[in-house]
Image 1 (tube, rainbow, N blue to C red):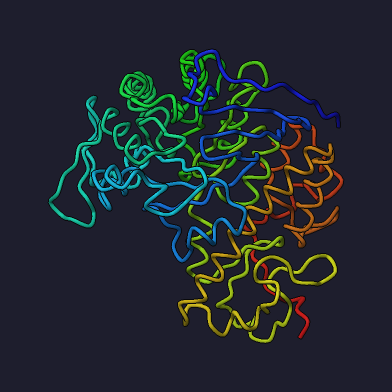
Image 2 (tube, rainbow, N blue to C red):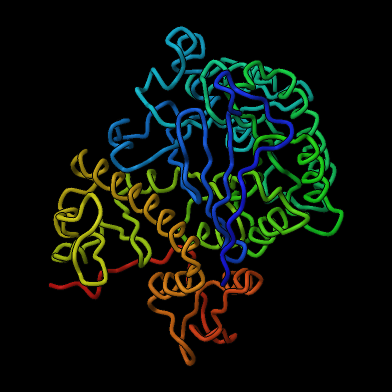
Length: 454
């Protein structure tokens, strides 16, 4: 598959920083089909895409130091405006010179606007045209009103390199017929709120404001996603996110929304970064990179680590399971059986003995899972640049679903994966039995350790 070199670009609407350079410069280095490899130059350095961005909700990733993240090669991580505004508070952040200084982090920071809490804390929230009023779940009876203006003010104080506009987020599981009015209202309100965010942004020379494409699961021609796309693009922002997904919708709907938003000619601008919010399963990320997404974030790799689950190329290892008690293989062996990553000298048996029992176990597995995700995206970037991404995807699927084989076989990967890859021009028909009789495996398969060297 051919690879194209493309020019640097920043939209006509960007403003120059004090150094004479816009706060975001996007250089698209190569494509392989729809997959992209780029460098995004931000105020705190270059970010190489595709990229996974670890989530440090309140200025820290649980169990990790800023030095740990630098050692892993992380160049951008996330903070959450809603939680940071509650603790340590934006007043403190303003006084100390921003979140970078508070957490001793020299890399880039992207902050969520707080809009996601409209879904996750819906029982504690009241949404109006003014904004969203929350009850702090840790302080019963307390109320805070988050408006587009307040969200941007807080993110300016935090000092994020990329700030997300406040959007009206509705659950992706709403009924498109029964809840049509609410879905349309949220899509329209998100556009009104982006204009308020743009107007409130007081530091465009140093901080980038991204808009979020909404529209629920409506991907028909001229539907809500098309409408939101067109209107967001018209505002000529430094970058764009795809929002409203990863909330329980069917994967057959999930990937079609992503495809609509990244579609050549009618999707998001090719010369600006594309961020898919809240997506962290390795399989989902691989497919969405193939569709043309650049940036991802999710709490999943860190959260699952605290419950004793490690991510590996064959799925997930639930290290609390007794089958690992005498599994002396490395946590993540390479094709020659040698350990790799920061835990290359730790066996599964050793981790089994301490997982959920010793605090250091959560830290170790978090370190591994973050390495796994960052390395996975770096590997995809290399394959895109070398023009071998389709072959890499085929190998990834074979490793990720070892129970699935060519016909006849009892199992196959999720069929939505084949549908999405067919559209991308990546053939997988010959790899697995896709017949109706084959049982679909889960998106995140479990590695049982049965092939362990005992």
